[in-house]
Image 1: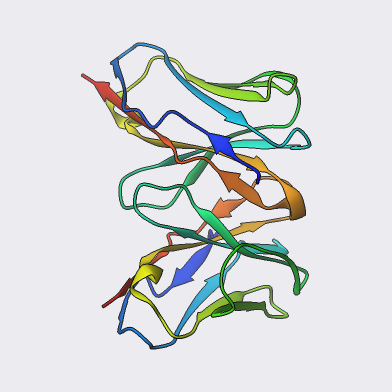
Image 2: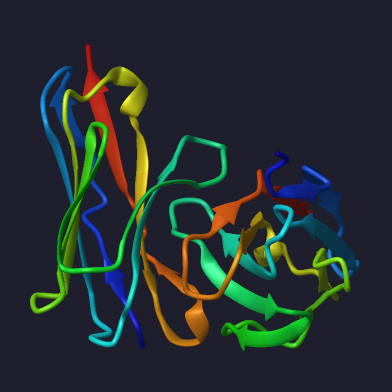
Length: 110
Length: 112
């Protein structure tokens, strides 16, 4: 059973702070990793993907991957109230489908 | 460019009925996947199609079926609806297998 684990939160951070979201996965053969943002009542929106060990930066977002530890994280710098949402970690597993975690709710207070 | 489009956006059905959900992928994308998301959970994989062939099936009963058409659009069919089928049904498209996938706005299905 391939599993993706996330802390459900909520993770509360003040505006302007760094939010750190974490995810672990069970399938050591996983190849690609994705972070989606989902606002309440909306569909998931892709914000980052990472395929190789290390860091990948895109604007205020940085994805970090450590395949040896089976760990992927998302850092959000200068957090804004508009970043308040549920962040879903997804891992590419067998048949190239995505296995999702339950998501971490992020709350950014003004 | 248009993103992934799904129809309808909302649907109310009675137990035992049948439902068909439709999805048009991003232009040029050859892979379509279907996911079910219940409240408080992450999306659960139902089906994946690539070049009109089924490439994966999740742990869902045979009441669920899907297909992909020559224009790469897809439909998901659910027979003999149960109350537990109430969920947000999401379609995702990608250009190739294994790379980033983009979701449509979803279809909110309520079974009463």
